[in-house]
Length: 206
Image (cartoon, rainbow, N blue to C red; front, side, top):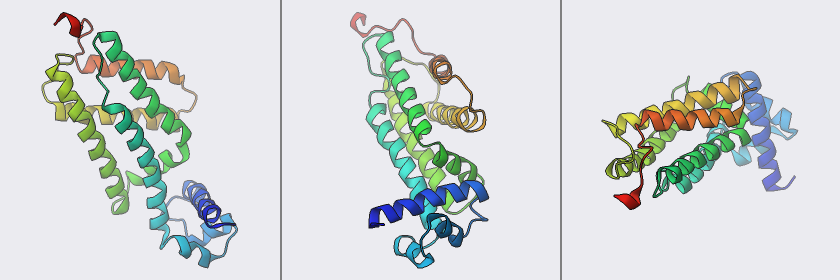
């Protein structure tokens, strides 16, 4: 194997073994046995199983962050209510797609990350704070434009994070036979109604 493929093989094996045995019960020897490489090879790339877990989760969070940064700047953009709704729908669709494409890693982060301290707490809280900062900024702009009406945007951003996190955990990882198109529509509707969105909004008439 080349350098890239050896590292990727270790990551793929680590994801598989972490899911099968849980983080605490997994040993480096389990990972290298699954990957078919010598144990010393593991340490050419990672210092510990904590280090490979961090890389696995960080890669997933970077994808979420990149897509959310790309879309969230325009979360509530639009001159009419229908244009704004379309933007919110696109953000929700993008987040759903990232989770669909990375379900194994998402499950690791949710199941292992939430219930443990240390590295897990650090990774999880980092994702939480990033989401909150981005969405809070966009909610403030939307409030200023008269698009949404919410008493405290900080609290509102926490509500939204919880909505996405719990929804994706349950319907994509636990109950896997959900109609995702219907789920997407319902999430968008729930978000807009929860933020008291002005469905009559038209910037051109203001």
